[in-house]
Length: 135
Image: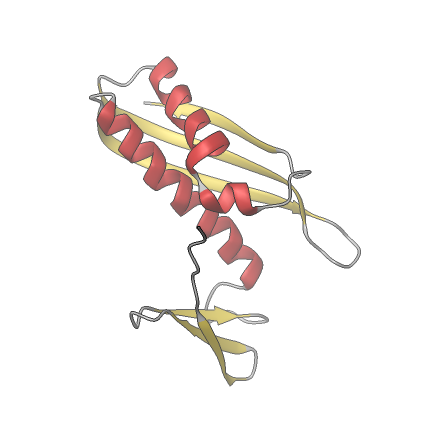
């Protein structure tokens, strides 16, 4: 059975758009300016937010009490159109009680391979790599 998600994006002037969910949650998009993230930055943010939520939940189930969590995401784009991402690299920065490298990598790997809907919605030919920094 499918789970359909819908958003409406409206032009609000110049290169700016506003997205809204059925619940009324809004996001600003600026395709050519400094007022809001552009669509391609939003793809990276969505991937980071999605995998971040997964990793936090998995860590909790592993009885790890995270005190710091951050994901930095970089995307390499094609030079020609369509200028889609051809590689994505993430840097996970984590700290917490009970956190080990094995647990952190297990949580990240589970998210990226199984649970993160955004990452798994990207084209299958895009390599997604990561580094881990524990403190």
